[in-house]
Image 1: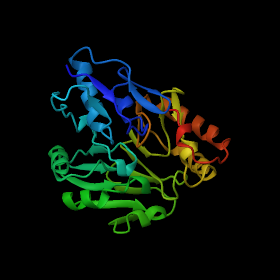
Image 2: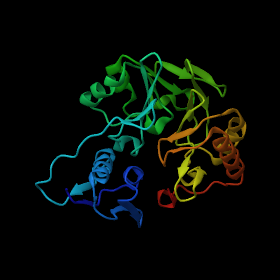
Image 3: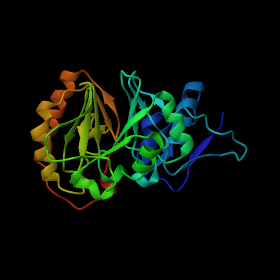
Image 4: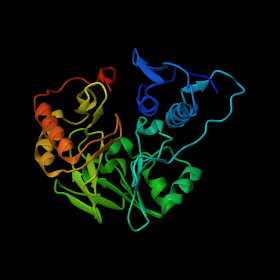
Length: 289
């Protein structure tokens, strides 16, 4: 088995730690190797972490190491795949493929751009829509949409980040994207933040909220809420009672599946906690995933 280390380019995006939490930890705002893989399953987890890392900071100790085995897109559930290959231009955000009963797919946010990756993602089915959750994740949206022949979606509040979008979500009312898929505008992290709810099972929350391993609960990243934490609190208060899902699938932060009733209770609790938060200076070092 290859041995690995983390180089100095790490941006503490948490992506690798999500995929190999037993092998990769955090110290002083950077990832580090807790220990080397011990078996084939751990080796696969490490390879996934290596290829998801946006800065390619997880490196082999040996110059003769083989190429990492690429598991992406990686199935998280029977309807959701993790794209991997996270992009520095989206601050390392996760992107997903949502499989539809018709045999088509939707892409939520975008991995790094390459034609080879785009062609690989279409093996899961034709991609009809690229759904952007907000401006920070818009970097490769047009290129993927054009390659797929898909519609590109964004909210009007962040339209300047994708001015050539094919579909623009307006206002605060929910918008049906396709059968079983609804966009819920959720301004706060940015003015045009949106979450996408699919089949009352999957919540693609962008950077509005995520599952925190540190807190063991849903959380918001108030230290990097660009637009307004008060507006995010209002958005959650308005929306939390209307959402029902089992999976939270964020751009940044960890994923989690819980029974829908439990997730609803936790989301209402998050709305209450967020109401108590006050603006503070942007501080990436303040994030505790």
